[in-house]
Length: 262
DNA sequence: CGTTATGTTTCACT
DNA sequence: CAGTGAAACATAAC
Image (cartoon, helix red, strand yellow):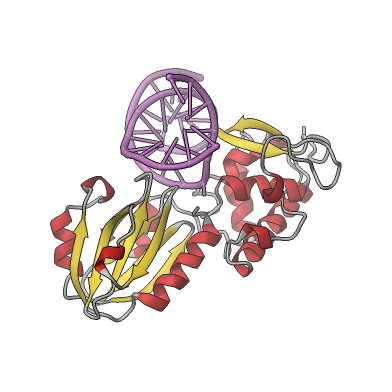
């Protein structure tokens, strides 16, 4: 379930399980998950160690003792799984590293939208992908600059990784719900104050979600995520949450609560 | 059987 | 060239 807060949790998980142990084997059972040749992963990972991680948005960069940096993207259904017994390999653990202590690290990916890549430099990779700064660190100034040229729905723009890296579908919905702004409001119509409100809501969603380890039931009651489904009711108005499509994605919002800015 | 799902990439069009 | 929207990708679950 990976958006920014989930991937932050995965980072912490990998930091606490996989670092500073020699890799003795690399195995991938479906090459479609690899952006670079399988032989390259063998070459640059086996007999090396993972030494540290850096997360930018939903991308996780894993530094190694070797010449390359491992890049992991979890897609829609990815998650890490560190386990001991070989027979405990998870059903969708399509990529597996084995460490010198006999433990294994599986990259689970049910829908196979996630992938691994190798790179020489994080900054270059970030630039090539047109990735913005991580939404957690992004300044208000840079956020405004990125929004400046846009003429489309704010919801779609919030999910654009070149605007604020890490915001995905549920976070964008919650940010706009907490901002009381309709997801189809055009960016060009938003006031300075609207944008400040959205920026603050974005930071709040991120910090609250990370603090609660992306465990939705623990989020405060005012989070839309508890009612992000058809037939559910808005905690503010009591009216039904509506579902529409914005930017090609299912979008949930509270019609009376969230103003369409024009 | 048809629809939907937490994401990114590609491609055609403006 | 930049921005936009739709389609594609692969698969499970409802």
